Image (cartoon, rainbow, N blue to C red):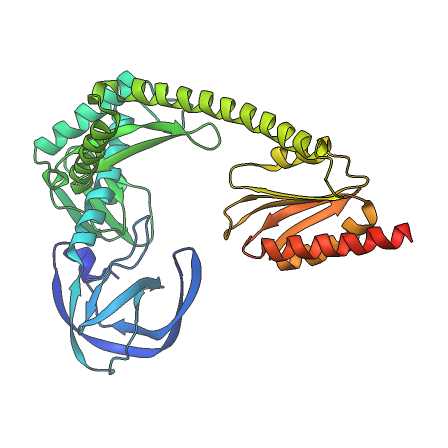
Length: 391
């Protein structure tokens, strides 16, 4: 059975009737989170909303002003998922989201056209690579066909029709015939003339699976949208880099090298600072047996250098880096007994994750807002422990 959307791909509105409506659920992913929507599966007498299939996404639109959120195929029938129930037997007007549909038609027809042009130029996608010159020739030949206004026709044929010999045999045959180019079986929606593709741009190739090559291309309005987006990006880069488009790559390369040099210099300074901080504490005649320090800029290596420079066999060292009231890193180093005992309690107060062994307990804190409380707690507990040992 062919749907109305397959018989006339350009129909934007259609009147039909509801055959069935039953409660259903739709599982979908929104912003990376899986959600389950409650609604209804509706079957119509016929439909202009294409159900997902043949490599083409499903249409979206309205059924009696109720949004159709998903259209799938169940055997010969199309099932529309809607949020509100529709009365069985009710006559309804169906409207397709034409911008989305026409984009799918352009990409789908462009894909079929593209595949055939590749074979005509003896370039196969299952080869390890495609040479730049071949890619350019393919793009030229493809766009020549578009400018030639080559008709695209849909044929519904019986299995014994001689025209079926153009394609592989099948029980139900729907042929998309691009005049003078190729004929293929396809269930999707297509443009009626290659001129409606407007243009095809081959962006390049990438290595595919099993020694194949993936051809990356744009068709129709996507070419225009891509050009508009690329131009907007180009103007922003001109403003940021203070150079013309031809010098953008060179300018970014210089910036990356400068950043790497600054990062290297910053790392050296942090290491020297860590040693100086530890030495300053060790040289203080009034120092006690507890040392605490926080720095917004730093990393695990910064904290480890400080701890290594200080004799943690006698001194309890509590170090943190990161935002003062935000996430960060922590390190507790000192005598094995107190560290093992206080580490989990510190972890709970900092809402973090971590582990410890051999006199060190470190990890990530979700919030350093209670750092002051942790410092006071550690100092108090270590003082008690140290006093009990002296007694």
